Image (tube, rainbow, N blue to C red):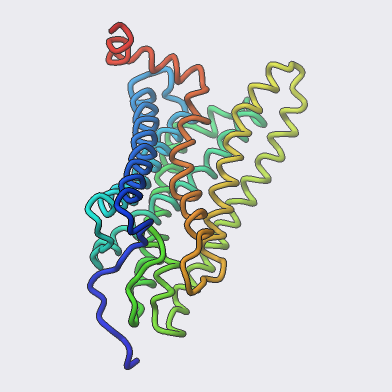
Length: 311
């Protein structure tokens, strides 16, 4: 323990030392952030102000958009500011806050995707019981459960990570404070508590994945029994995008947290982090809503949208 130092700040991964490339990184992340911001805000406004969309499926979609909006806002603004100001530092408290809020939102995102799979299962496989099972009270409880579970899981991971002693280097090999990269800075053989928390979370995530897979097996069996091709197409167009996002989100997230960490920065680590933290919030508005006729109609009914299109 003689090498233990008091860490007051961390240094995040810089994409380049060349000023022009730093500006390019800023512009690239700004485009991603604005696209995710605009897409998710439009969904939130459309669902919130259109009574036709006050149904369980769109209620969960609204919650998903809020979570996605929050998750990109936790990481991207800080990374963009670092590139613009040519600084890589983040305070200890800022790193703690980033880990907690990002994990809260991403974990709640996963649990909400699981709830959405259950919603689709009941709607397609048990349509006569849908209104009884997915009533307002049940939907609120399920959404609240996803949010609360995310907060509790994040609190567990954040506490177990930052209770550990950091030794020597404070360079985080990622563009945000990421637990797998933070554990590389912990004194040797001192991170058993976080390993246990990760194992518990991995089991819960695996349980969600198994539940989703089983739900979709039942959904696809029911869809194949639909007599009309139009009905089958509508059901598949609703379910397949959801399944693709879930698969991408879970596989990349589990890979990032369970794979052995390397001692040097890895392009694979960076790519995986982008896939599970940035890609879902960016593409969710597209695959869930922008191809959805009901969402498009709701957007056209917004007063501001009509004023914009008239001009």
